[in-house]
Amino acid sequence: MIVNDRITEYIHSLESSQGSLLDSIEKEALDGYVPIVRRETASLLRTLVAALKPSRILEIGTAIGYSSLVMCQVMPEDCRITTIEKYEKRIPIARENFKRAGEEERITLLEGDAEEILKGLSGECFDFVFMDAAKGQYLNWLPLLLEIMPLGGVLVSDNVLQEGDVAESRFAVLRRNRTIHSRMREYLYALKHMEEWETAILPIGDGVAVSTRVR
Image (cartoon, rainbow, N blue to C red; front, side, top):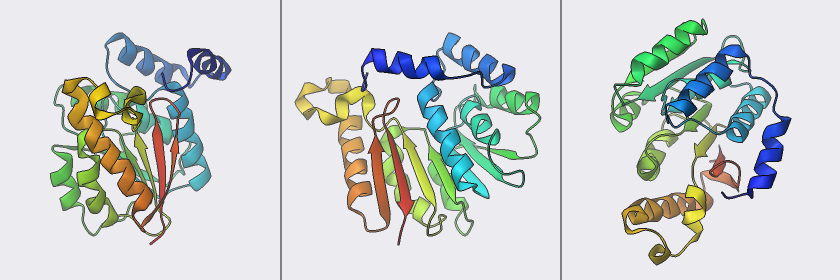
């Protein structure tokens, strides 16, 4: 844990129901070991969307649709979400969850490799992007996002602190995790040093970077 268990448990105790459907989807995901955003990260996501009132949202990493539906709860009525998922087994579950929520008209799910799809979105404009897919690819996707995000657009990147491993020496990390460790450190350095972004890195959940495009 990045934040100690006692604080995390207290934060969770303050949460109210997300509604029967989202509570059910969350339970199904946890029971089936499907990676979804943590409760405190979902709260941050919901708060940002409610505050910023985006017109078009891009999500990279649909899983079973939980985070898309979290955003749907608070986004403007005329806002639309485009979400990308590669893992074939989860795609029909996500589509069914969107149908259960009655949100098929506001959510478009694109199937396939995120990099190829992002290249195909060139020329479109998304003022809010939530990235929660292959962590080692975040840095590769960053220049593609600059092509589709306007000034003032907000990028939210999940799982950036890797259970705290990102702060450790490369040699203190398990060998199998060293590549993702290096790539995430490079990604966070880029976000904090590229003139196009103003970024805050928050120790919420598994670490969240919130970046605003300023150039």
